Image: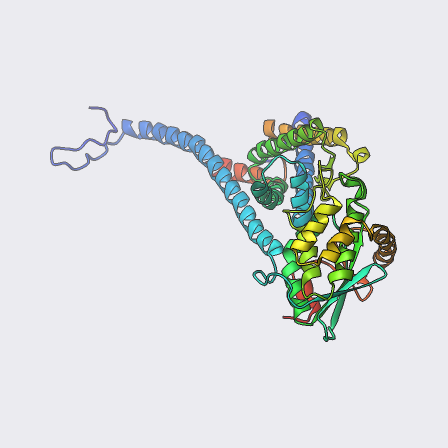
Length: 277
Length: 165
């Protein structure tokens, strides 16, 4: 029977500690317990620190995912294609608006048909723009640039796509919604060619896409023949110059210009312009 | 009772602090520029052509905040060794991505500090990007080996634990 043990006496109660010798052993016991607690304490501390770090990482990522979802959410999701807009062309720039309306807001939209960030812009804001134009509160001047030609497989895709859009505006612009539907189709992930990709759309394919978006056969043959490609190239050069002037030298797409100044494209940029809460 | 540390320890402390704050700054800037431009980040990730489309979105959404989180941990010196190990893993993954892109003849900007996507073939800078990432890995490996740095939560906690034990 060792001293210092918590031996129970015959009645099952803890035996009282005896004085004298056990005090030294208890002191030694306390020191070794304290030493053990320190080393296991620092191990435990390490685990706690590591646990807190993991929690911090997960928390920041979760907050980030929520923010990201808000920032990239499709605006006016579910509205769909434009059904009331018409397109008129003037000097290579196509203006889209609702006939008979006097929209309070007009924006100049600069894009390149090959530009993937423009495709993201279309994904996020296309339906909201369709809705605002259909409601008569917004008019859009579409400027198609072509500086990404060299990144296209055929070497001139951006100009040809811009030419195709001009054909649709000229031949089918008065058919409600057709121009905007074709414009959206060109930027959809199903159709937009990849930069430095192994293929892009030929004039015939651009024409087929136009007619399946509702354009007339006349628009289709205008596209297939490449009729407006030269004009589109000239318009792209001119638009590039006006964009450079508005932004102080920076030609990048997509850019939205309102009242001569580029718009900061935060998630609610269009709602703010339209005066919506 | 104060003690002055031997000069060797002071030097290693100094290097460690510079490494920790430097790496923190790298992550905070890198993550921050990605976080404010989600569209650009998606384009940058997609350009590597490694992930399928569905995964691109998730990677582009999470990556900036993982970087920011590592930057925050390193900045305050909390769980420095863990943050350094994770940093090394992420940096090695970046280098693998850049090397993979170069080997496949892709022509992209790494998008590491914002920007990203496709660039003219003459403008790729794969060699520079790999060297830069290797430099950052040197910092993270140093901190993995010697994570105890001055002005850190780690050191504060350790000293309080030592005193109360």
